[in-house]
Every structure is written in C-alpha cells, then in structure tokens.
Length: 231
Image (cartoon, rainbow, N blue to C red; front, side, top):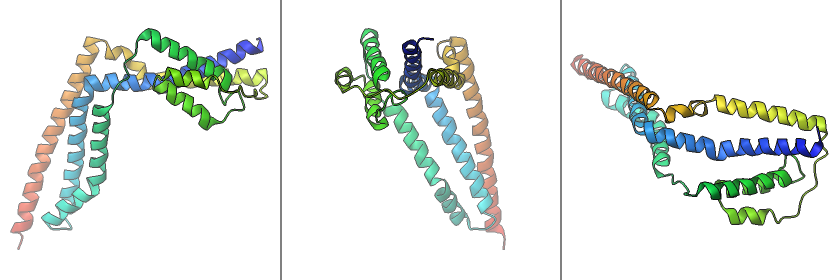
C-alpha cells in the first residue's frame, strides 16, 4: 500500500478515536443522563443510604447508638460528597450549540492537524497536541486554524510495516470502545420501547431499595431499643 495513503488511514483512525473520546462518548452519556439520570441519582443515593444503615446496625455491637450513627456517617462522608459532585457535574454541564455544517468544517480542520502534527506520526510535543484537542473539544475554529500555521514538524522514522500495525491496533481499540456501554446501546436512546423498558427496570430497582431501606430502618430501631433496655 502507498505510504501516504497508509499514513492518511492511520491519521483518520486517530481522528475517529479522538472524536469518539472528546465528543461521542460525552454526548452519549449526556443523552443517557437526560433520559435516565434523575432516576439513577435517586437509586444511587438510596443504595448509599442502605450501605450506611447496614454499617450503622453493625457498629451497634461495639458502640452506643449515638457513636454508631456518627461513625457510620463519618465512614460514608466521602462517598456522599463524591455523589453530590457527580450530580453537580451532570446538572451544570453546558453544551456548545453549533450547526452541523460548522461542526463538519471544524472536524476537517482537526483532521488536517492530526495528519500534519500528531505525535504518533511526527516529532511534535504531546502537550502541544493536547491544546489542539482542547480547541477541537471547544469547537474553537479560530484557534484550530492558527494551530495549522505552526511550523510543520519532521516525520517520525516509521516503516510501512509499523504503520500497518498502528492501523490494525487503532481499529481494534476503536471497536473495543464501541463495544462498551453506552456506545453499543445508542439505539436504546432513541427507541421508545427500549427507553420504557429501562425506565421500568430502574423503577423496580428503586422500589426494591425502598423496601430494603424501610426494613433496615425497623431493624435499626429494634436494635437501639434492645440496647437501651438491656440492664
């Protein structure tokens, strides 16, 4: 295979990989969270409270009710904060509004940057290439065009055989990305029956967790009462 064409195929696969990581995966998660996110947050919170309640009950074997409650809260404080941060990220993210035509132009500029500057193909600093990826993520056309004005770096001494290996490895890596959730379930985010099925699944999990939580609450109250009634 002609070298320039092989290099072009490798650069195209690098683009597909980067575009998947920078745009497709976040947008897919965003769409998923738009449909299922609120209910998943309730489920996650309830699951965390169930774990904390179970720990509280276990600690009553060694501590007073007040100390057991405080220690269980202390042990799970970090996880509750992390969950709160996750919720903030999901609710505060803002999408950059841009037309399909303009996005296509920006994609083509980034493709060209990869073809001439990718550290996988050229003697070009990875930290500098990261700036181009950030511009692409932010749809900053002007910054991308300015990036193209940089001096072209020297090509790495890569054989055609190694280029072919790079191509094969990228194809495998990209296919593995698409096998992972939620990229392998994009249809689920458009199909009403699939959406209803998964909403019902989450609702059933939430109802089961509510029942478990209620039962543990009763168990905790009984154990506290027994502890206080013991002479």
